[in-house]
Image (cartoon, rainbow, N blue to C red; front, side):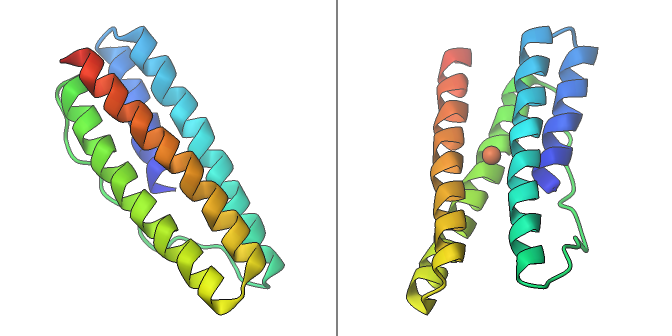
Amino acid sequence: MSAIQYYTTQSNLCKIWGLESAASKFEEEAKEEFDHASRLINFMLKLGLTASTTQLKSIPKTRTLKEILIVDWQLEKDVVELYSDASQYCLNSGLIHGYELFNALLEEEKHHLKSIEKWMLELN
Ligand SMILES: [Fe+2]
């Protein structure tokens, strides 16, 4: 949910700055993160849990596209570590459905992290 908020905010910031291409990319990122959130909520509901977020991460102030990408790189790096831990925990605990979900999300976020790194290189 924090990632959705990050990317939606950044998409709108880029629109304000006249960076339409970047705005579209962030809008796509928000949609991908929405899909991830939906899959996680679905997983929790099947376990009989209520999906509720108690606190979203605050969005650091950014004034340039480069600053946005630095913030996003850290966000995605943290998510990769979180999903890596979660998939390993599920694997060790014999929770195969959890492992499958978190491992799939891990692979998608690793790809996402690489695409941010590529974008940062292109900006430099
Ligand atoms: Fe992501």
